[in-house]
Length: 343
Image 1 (spheres, rainbow, N blue to C red):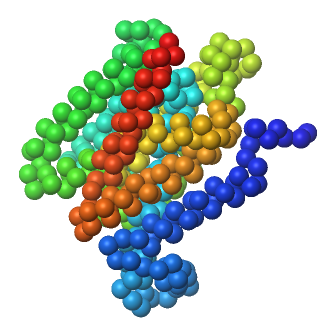
Image 2: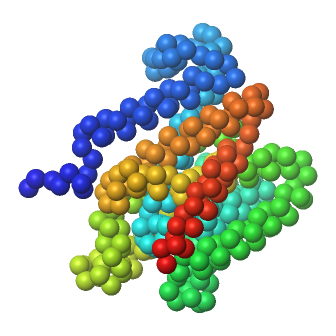
Image 3: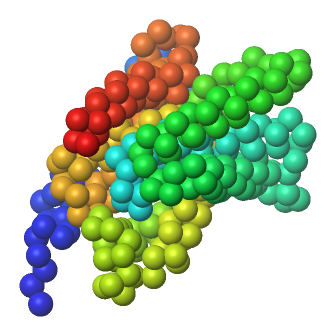
């Protein structure tokens, strides 16, 4: 059977996405407080793959500092954007996102508690904050949706956003209280809560890659079901979609992805709100195209934001979450305004 071109990417479109992603990654590895040419970058990576020891300062910067950071940023951007697209499709809510629904704040609270209490899993030093962030993300999401349903059975956009904002303020207040009593860790924890990938390592990148491969792969596999949700839950049931299973699966996957991202880079807001909307304008509403486009778009967007964060006021580094929130807040107002006019 001939595949409908509107349902999947054509080879040329995939090539353009891959080219844009690679170009952005090369740019982010080369540019920084120390300028490094693409030729030096490729040589350093080739030497590292061949097992050769870094022979210059630039090679050490590329392999030891920039490359693991850029890889981690790219994977986190892909995960956050994919979660935003999945939540918007599941809830049929154009404002659904980990940051607007309070999930990111809940995950950050869980990760912060783990960092302050020293909670860890034997043999897995990164797993403690990650597990706590995932559990708090899922718990926050269920709590918020439960409160909204108790107040408004229709789960309207305004109700979800209102409760999400209230919960975010509550979680932020608790985090501020905990940080206040952290004393010597106060400065580093405050910077982390604003979103920062400083100090990212290959272990962070591998952790994010593993989580994205598992839970992101599951979300991508539910593209057809998310398309069915666009015409309502009842219609989705009528065409054979197990609505309850898809809801639980999607929410668990989004919580795992957001929790892992937050445990690595802190609270990075609005990526899942901005990127899916841009991708939807370019690729259309079909989730078979939208979800892969959001993966690539989220990576590119967050890599560029992180590049700006570490170069605009170099050698001073800005929290990347500040930049994404500045950009996202403008999109939030525009989308909220358009949603209100459509009513």
